[in-house]
Amino acid sequence: MTAAILNDTSPHAGGNAAWGPLATAVHTDAARPTDPTWKDNAYVSFWDVTGEIYGAIHVSTSPNDAGSRRARFSIQLGTGQVEIIEELPAGSFASESISFGLDGTIGVDHPDLRVLIGNAPLWVPADYSLNDLIPPLVPGRPLQHFQQACTVRGEIAHAGRTWDLDAIGMRDRTWGFRDESAQWVEYAGLVGVVEDAFLTVIKFLGADGSLRSDGYWTDDAGAVLITDVAFRRNAAAQFVSGTVTLADGRAKVVSMSSRRAGFFVPMGRETDGPAFGTYDDFMTFESDGATGAGFFEQGIIHRVH
Image (tube, rainbow, N blue to C red):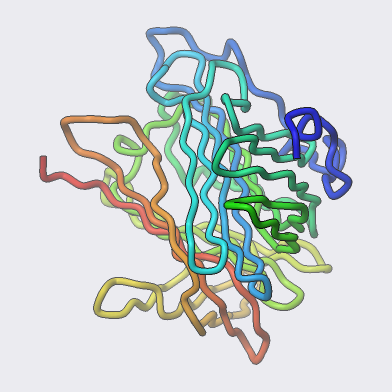
């Protein structure tokens, strides 16, 4: 793969029109220097259980906070992991080596890793903006947050070897005023595709002590709101199972079958004070006799400094 190839559109990408709100362009002048930090984030996490490939790309840019501009590509290929983290310019989702195309094309052109993959949407978007789960930092300007299941396909080259990727994943697009350490104390989220349904649910402990859940169970019939989730963890605080309650009265139990990979998630900026730490734990799932895979994400403020 060459830089020229990485500028082409992947045949597996969905295109801007297919992605709807998740293809929303970066907001280059949405905040003034004196405003709270504005972030434009885009993210794809993916899992190829058969090929033993797990990964994530996360880009975050800001018009008024240089410390909040970062591109990251993390991948596990079999038993080995590769991670690239670079600074992003303002108003762009392309760093020196990593590019996140809103049409669904993702490229990495780095001496340690070459990637050309495309993502195309499955089912309908989950709109986290509807329920004001995250209190707005600026009154009247709430955070906009969408997630959607997707296919992720393409090619990866590392250490003289090439892998063909045929994965399922989750794509995320978020924009607005955002400060993780100020808006919440802890959160946990479960994301996965279980046979013929996409699950995304997050539970937040707010800075005011409130505990709230939000999410969707999405399949061919549409998206049903998740009103609550309860997590069970082991002695190391790792996910064991989750019970989700749907707005239509159904309850779904999703249980971990096997742990497969994990990555730390850089969320904030370097600091001498409290810091928000986040980790993604990839695993296979079982629910009502159906099998699937995805990840469990936990984030918490570390106050000892």
